[in-house]
Length: 171
Ligand code: CO
Image (cartoon, rainbow, N blue to C red):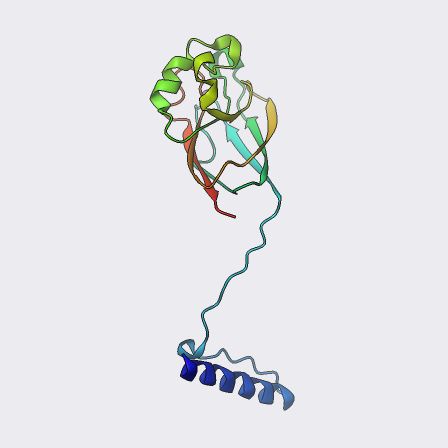
């Protein structure tokens, strides 16, 4: 470690000397001499996400990433033309451990609650209402604790293909 530091300092000194000489040579220090770089990432307090749904029963993204505690504004856009009665889409973020199949199947019985089954509302971290072609809707919520979550469209028959991962990184 000490030896590495000395080499790194020497390279730094040479670089300084080279710059002082007027020639702005930007030689990269040899890899073995460089200290490990600690990346400091500045995480914003908020993030805006956009996801689209179409008439082919597809979400435009299979994964969304946020950081713990961020204020998330998510916009769901329906880029298709079909009405919400036949090709409705919503975006539902579920708690970890919730079975998508169980949720998706139960949702069929909740058309008047945006296809959120009443007895499973405690499994929902955030959700939009159901929209049809040409519409869009935004929701704002706080990113849950770090972990891997799943989102889906709970319109009848859609959850099997309209689903994705919601990845929350630690702060
Ligand atoms: Co859908």
